[in-house]
Amino acid sequence: MDPLARTNVVKDATTRFSCRVDLYVKHRPGYPPALIDFLADVCNLRPAHVVADVGSGAGALAEVFLRNGNAVYAIEPNPEMRAAAEHALRGYSRFRSVDAVGERTTLPERSVDLVAVGRAFHWLEPDTALAEFARILKPEGWVVIIAFRRNTASPFLAEYEKLLSSFRTDRGRMRQRRRALDQFLAANAFKTQTLPEERWLGREGLQGLTLSYSTSPAPDDPQAVSLLDAVDALFQKHQRGGEVLVGHDVTIYHKQLGLSDNR
Image 1 (cartoon, rainbow, N blue to C red):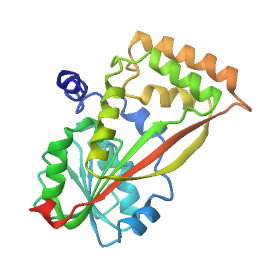
Image 2 (cartoon, rainbow, N blue to C red):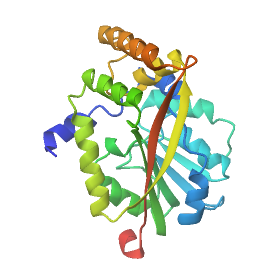
Image 3 (cartoon, rainbow, N blue to C red):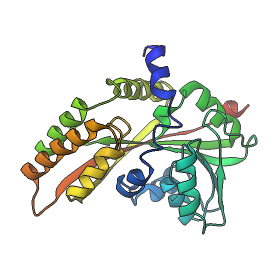
Image 4 (cartoon, rainbow, N blue to C red):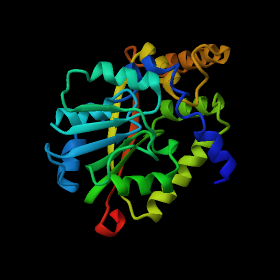
């Protein structure tokens, strides 16, 4: 990938969700219920383990681990997202909010059992981030990266994807970056497991999901009105009983870092 394109994608990663926090919290899909069982089986995750949630956003993934009994360091540089997580998770005694970026978490060496990155790895510089993960992980700890990709299997979802592409504000750079990161993870011997996630959405839910994407026009951008008009037309075309089925493929990239990776 062109280094300049990569820089343009990530340079405002700490601010670009500031105007979408409420939309993100309300409308983004949650993590599959099978996630913790998968991590317990494959990564030997136990409630006593300490987790670093890198790019923790508004705290959705952190809460999954907190409910499992884990202590969680939530690493998030965006102040609005971090504040939303601190409010939502204030009742969990094992929650720690950290103002930092994934490449420099500020955590001590060998302090966590698992590093999790949910929907955020494409904002990181991968080589630097992976080196930081190795630094903070205990020997033979795990790195888990979770990516949500929109499913395009149905006629509605295929048309929806095409519509989103026509309004993208990043000129396709994010899509290019995600392909490069897939290659990076494969080259670094990450294994994968894909879990399905789908839900029925009404008109408001589909609108909110659409504007929650970082590549959509900002909610106060005049182009957002045109986008929502097009989304409404598509919704009316495909809705059944006032809802449409929206699916994502949730891919879990996972790798255990050996002793040599932590030195």
